[in-house]
Image 1 (cartoon, one colour):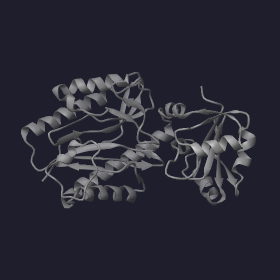
Image 2 (cartoon, rainbow, N blue to C red; image 1 turned 90 degrees about the horizontal axis):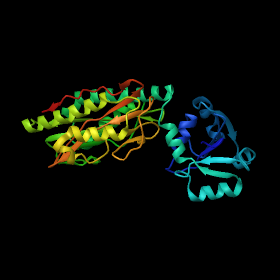
Image 3 (tube, helix red, strand yellow; image 1 turned 180 degrees about the horizontal axis):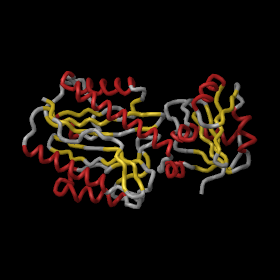
Length: 339
């Protein structure tokens, strides 16, 4: 059961609390948000007040100087208050307890569970992020023959996402040749190498992340390479078709390994994950996952195999519905040859 009061603070630095944007629809530092009875109040410094009033869906209160604790004290003192200890530093938590005595409770897992099912507004942002991701991939295909390096492709993708009015969801993966055998490969400033090239990226809109992977081939594939690609594609498409409310995440993972057959030993990561205000959210599609799909979740389906200096991964963002699914990324999945 959630506490009646939830306090989320962005106190500066690189570890912003994802729950802050989730609750307020606003991104800033040195600010706090309090949720009580389903209503959120955002406390921001004077310099951020006008921007917050324009952008946040929460009630906005201006904080002058060092008034933050003075304003929060009467609301929180002596009450049960939920805080996210995954993102509140030890020192910040110590100061909070000293200045405002209350019964603090960690809500990191509570908030992860709450965020797993998306609202209509969240789904709208995710759909827009996916549309931009598809658009940028289309532009990449039209220009890829003129791009000579892995970093060149990554830079092109980042530039086009920004030109579309979005942000980069996470560092772009462009893994050509033997680099494709590493799922989290970092693109290098080297000429594109012949063979499979895994391209994994997404746009971010209003704090919500898209995630898509396509594998193209640089050069001319052998019959065996074409067959491997078609196998992974067939498994990915069948798994997407299995998505609906009530399906166990662990069952989807097991179905992926079953579909890959003798190549399952080369499938070395989870089948997918939730996406939202973080690029990796609940649910996790892993062998030990306890979660069951619920309508409103947005997940990725991304089987892959990696061996002998080769890698193939195909990934889509998918909305879970009561009686099925909605595919949010629509870029072509046939094996595209770049010669």
